[in-house]
Image (cartoon, rainbow, N blue to C red; front, top):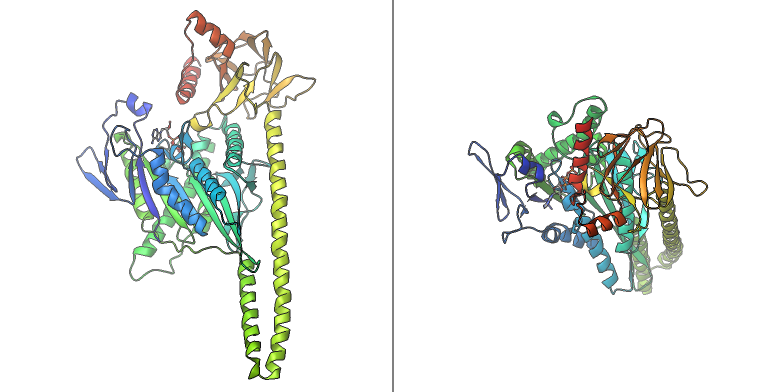
Amino acid sequence: SGVTVAVRVRPFNSRELALGDTSCVVSMLDNETFVNSAKGEEHRFAYDYSFWSFDNKGGDFASQEFVYESLAQPILAKAFEGYNTCLFSYGQTGSGKSYSIMGHGDEVGIVPRFSEELFQHIESSCDSNVTLNVEMSYYEIYNEKIHDLLTGPNLIGTPNIREHPVLGPYVEGLSTCVVRSFDEVEGWLNVGNKRRATASTGMNDKSSRSHSVFLLVLTQTQVDGEKHEHSRISKINLIDLAGSERQSTAKTSGERLREGASINKSLHTLGKVISLLSERSTTVPKKKKLFIPYRDSVLTWLLRESLGGNSKTAMLATISPASVHLEETLSTLRYAKQARSIINTARVNEDPKARLIRELQMEIERLKNQGGVGGDATSELIRTSVTEIASLKEKLSMKEREMAEMAKSWQEKLLCSEQQKLEESQLLKKSGVALKIDRSLPSLVNLNEDPQLSELLFYMLNEGEVHVGQSVKEEGGVHCIQLQGPLIADKHCIIINRNGRISIAPVADAPTYINGNLIAMATDIHHGDRVILGGNHFFRFNHPKEAERRKRSGAALNTSANLPKDFEFAKQELFSVQ
Ligand SMILES: Nc1ncnc2c1ncn2[C@@H]1O[C@H](COP(=O)(O)OP(=O)(O)OP(=O)(O)O)[C@@H](O)[C@H]1O
C-alpha cells in the first residue's frame, strides 16, 4: 500500500502578523492544496487529505480531533491487526508539527489521543483468550546521537542499531517501559518532556533541531483452543521531525554548523530515501534493485521499515499560510508529493516462536494422520511416525516453556518499569523540580522557546534558603535547584524566602538577571518578574499570595498570559538591556 499523505495549513502566527504578512497564499479544496505565488502562478498538489486549519470560522475547518480521526485512527486500527505503523510530521520550524503530533495545552494532539484510544480499545476488548501488552519508548535524535527521554543516562550517544528478526532495526540500550494504562503513558510523557526541557535549556533551538520519536510496541498474545499461544507484535512510531528549513537559512557558525549539518544529514538522507523510493515505485519497468541508502543516517536506518518496507505509514506535512515562507512551503509540498508515491509492503508480524509452535503442531497432526491410515501403511512407516511425533512433541514442549519464560520476563519488566519511574521521579526531585505543585507557594517556572517545553519545570521556593547551581546538594534541610550548562556556576545564587518576601543573591559574580537587569547584590523579586540565570536559563517568578494581594488592591499584574511570548519577551528584554 502507498504512504498516506496529508497536508495541514496553520493560522498566521504572531510574528507573521507583526510583519504585516497577512495574505494567505494557500487554499484548499477537497483533497487538493493550491499555492499562489506573488507572480500569479498557481501551484496545485493532490494528497490523500488537505487539512484546512487556517481559521476555525469556516465549515471546512480541520480541528485536532478531525486530523486525528482522519489520519491516525486508521493507523491505530492497523496496529491492532498486527501491522507495523508509522506517522511522521514534516515541515519547517514553526509550521505546526509539534502542535499536531503532541498538541499544545487543551488542543491535544495525535500522541495522547492515540494512546488514550489504544487503551480504551484494550479495556473494552472482551476476548479473554487474548492478552495485550504495551511497551513505550520516547527518544530524540539530535546531532546523529540518541537522547533517551525516559530513564537512565540521557545521552546514549552514537547509537548501536541492531536488527530484530521480526521488528527490524532498533536502538540497543534504549529504555522501554511497560505501560498498562493511558495514565501511565501520560506519566512517562511527563517525565520525558521534563527531561527534554532540562536538557534543552541553554541550547538554542535544540528542540526544533531534533527528531523526537514516540514508540509503542503492542503485543497481542492469543491462546487458542489447545492452549497454545501465538503473538502478533506491532511497532507504532509517531515522529515529530526536526524543522526542515534548508542550510542556507540556518545559522552557520561553529557548533551550530556542525549541528545543522548533522541534522541535515538525517533530513537530507530522508529526502534522498524518499526520492529514490518514489523513483523505484514509479519507474516502469520497476527498478527493484535500486539501492536505498537507509544506513546513511540514524533516522532513516530506524525508519527503514516505515519507508518502503513492512509498515503502514502516514505523513503529515505542515505548512505556514504566509507568503514569506512560500519557498519552504513549496519545498514541503513537493516532498510530500514524492512521499505519496512510495509503496510499502506491510505484513502481520508474528512471533517466530509462535509460528514454529503452530508448524510443529501441524506436523504432529500430519504424522498422526499418516499413522491413522495405518491399516494400509507399512509397520516401518508407523514406527518412523511414532519416533518423529515423540521428538516433535519434545520440541513443542520446549518452545512452550520458552513462551512461559517470556511471560515471566513480562512480569519482571513490569516491576522494573515501576522501579525506573520511581528512580526518575527521585532524580527530578533531587534537582529541585517539584513533582507535586503547591499552588500557594512562590515558585520559579521555566520558560522555553519551544512552547511545548515551557512551564513544565516548577521549582518551589519554601520558607528559608534555596541554593542554586551546578553542584549544589540537598543538605541539612537546605533546598536546592540543580541546573546544568556552561554558564551556570557551581554555586550560582541563593534565593531567600523570608516570610513570603523573596530575594535573589548572586554568588560571586555569577550572571543573574531580573527583568533583563544584571544584579550584583541581593534583590527582591515580585510576581511576574523574569529571572534569567547564566544568560540562558529563563524563568518566570510566580508569587500567588502577592498576585492575590495586588488583585485585591487593583494593581496591575506584570505578567503576560501568553507563555511563548513570555519567553521572547524575556529574551528581548535581556538583549535590549545588554
Ligand atoms: N493548526 C494550528 N492551529 C493553531 N495554532 C497552531 C497550529 N499549528 C501550529 N500552531 C502554533 O504555531 C506555533 C508553532 O507550532 P509548532 O511548535 O507546532 O511548530 P513546529 O513545526 O513543531 O516547530 P519546531 O520545528 O520548532 O518544533 C505554536 O505556537 C503553535 O501553537
